[in-house]
Amino acid sequence: MKIRGSICALATPFTSDGALDLDAFGRLLDYQIAGGTEAVVVAGSTGEAHMLEHDEYEKLLAFAVQRVAGRITVIAGTGEAGTAKTVALTRRAKELGAHAALVVAPFYVRPTQEGLRRHFTEVADKGGLPVILYNVPTRTGCDLLPETAAALRDHASIIGIKEAVGSDERIHALAELARADFVYLSGDDPTAGKAMLAGAAGTISVVANLAPKAFRELCDAATAGDRVATARCDEALRPLVQALNCAPNPIAVKAGLPVLGLGSAVPRLPLVELQEGAERTRIAEALTALASLANAA
Image 1 (cartoon, rainbow, N blue to C red):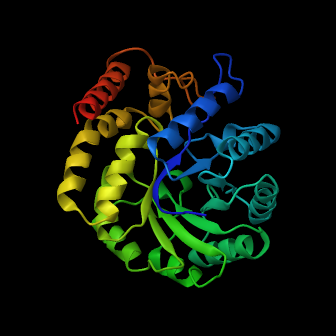
Image 2 (tube, rainbow, N blue to C red):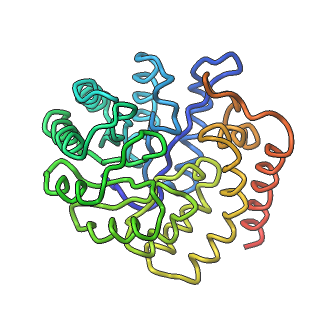
């Protein structure tokens, strides 16, 4: 199991009428492996986990495990608002073949730091999978603070944290927590290079859905401490990263899927498809520019 480097938070492709599109999902998985992605997250935030029916979640995860066939690590998104539900889904993910669980801080209910500590401890105790903590306050309404993460990292089954807060203060606080048995992973594409130069072991990325090779190059450069190469990779990726900021994730990244033949741009309500226009054109142009740079290299 490898939890470091370039990790893609996979989008979940749907057909034009909203059904799960496993054919497109298979192409997306193949595209990731060909591009050098080192692990994938199935049914995380980008994968519209909370818009999936239970049987769809199981089909998606089982399909990914079978398609990957041990070549890279498969991480299942198992976070729910309630602790018991999170434990149950984590156990099911283990049965379906996931290698680890990405567990987002409970959303909407706004637990205290003690509640977060007890929640993650319970999931780690009873879920049966190695747990990666996931902090994304803009989505959950609560912030898993570094001192709480520090209290959790001594649990044998808690192996790391995905941190989506990209401030300099938070990056350095999380980098100080990293050690051999607890990885810090960036969860913020715009600051991923900076985080890895500071000590993050990798990034769980949205933009990697569309540019796995370029993102792998960024991760390799930054985790090796090569500031010049990291700056070059950041510059190449910047137009795409900025273009994907036009709408809440995963609306924008899904608009890039049909450009690459990886599925439709359709999300599920209450998310709506990015309409044809300047924003979709900008995403397509950024992908073309990135491909041109790769061909010229």
